[in-house]
Length: 139
Image 1 (cartoon, rainbow, N blue to C red):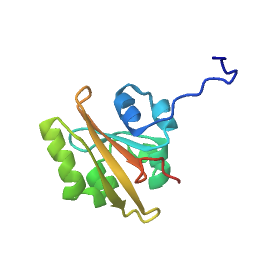
Image 2: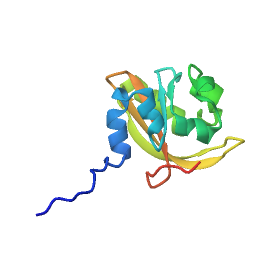
Image 3: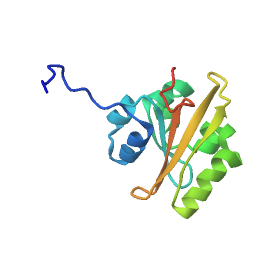
């Protein structure tokens, strides 16, 4: 079979691929992802907040890092459907769930799919925000 002269293309970012590798990604790599990505510690404090999420939420990364996600940044998420799952996953040290959610931000309300994944390696929770088909969101 003849080889193609086309340059090899980087594999497409999939939700599963992104989440499997999130712990080892640099801030620059996280910023290049086509999804909103937020890393939370066990208390809900924001450790990482990528460029896509910053744009979609109309909030600078510097203004998000270190803040409490559920009370200071996105209080609309402090409901059983979101916060309840987060807390239960942190307690169990096991979380891998997705659900539809409406972010009621004044500047940019949006309906999304949220994927929560607990990382035993870093003892943190990754929040991945995509459209309902798992595709990147348009800003």
